[in-house]
Length: 409
Ligand code: ASP
Image (cartoon, rainbow, N blue to C red):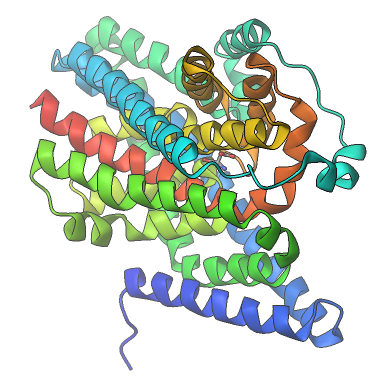
């Protein structure tokens, strides 16, 4: 019997994962059979993420170095830099504007009272995180001993070191061609390993979704229904309409073509809630299915996975408006501008791991004088919303690589 293609298997894995998870949820998490099922799902899901993380650092390191070296050789470095950063900033800006518009229009949180959440907030102590300090910490984290960064899986610092190394290798010309050749082969080898890991993706994704859906607490979802709907609606508008529209306008590529090529990465992002863990698959989709040149994808995608987060930026802005409504504070135009600016910094600074956006949101709330403890209210729904915002984050990176490729040409 011929198995369906990997792309289809992954989709089926996701559908079965959600269905089994819902069934487990209905049976109740305390049932012994469900407990064993969740244990097995946890084991398989964690192993899948471990495998992705195993290849992540060598892959990022080799792909950025080789990509930069190739770009510099062809004198395209400057244009790629400029168009990549321009795309990242403008797409996050669009995402935040969508959130602000939806938040102002629908006013989620206006019918609720802060006192309803006293229990949730009681046990939560927010760490102070002023904007200037956050910015300093972010800059300070860019340049790290490369061996430490590689060992810690610190993607942003690895990206920075690989950038510098790539430029140095090209400037050295013939002298360093062996190191460059070695890294090139390293890239090929790691991509091959990614190909093997991908064979487990349908199972891994199914397991992750079984656990996620089975353990969801639906009670808070109904209390926060309006906020959840505004966030989901805005994320869908950005991910299903605006990003594909930008892609179509710049490159002429159809949304359907993009969805087919990007599906593996989008579903993995949904199931793992981590742009970093998804990165190996995002790179594979971009280079193998979406025909982005490896030197462009190798630069735009790893950088995007750590700093370009449309979904996170959108979520943070929406959450700030929600909490302002809850506390009964009307944010004026100037304060909303601060929200816009800080949401972008917070999204750039958030690492690509689950719930990272919640940590950086503290800074955003403080910047407009809202109580940081209020994020305790959002914690119960965060894991669920993280799935969608991570998907949009990863989509933004892939759209970005296609747009940059077109602009550079
Ligand atoms: N989970 C997101 C990501 O990895 C970050 C966030 O928490 O918003 O892209």
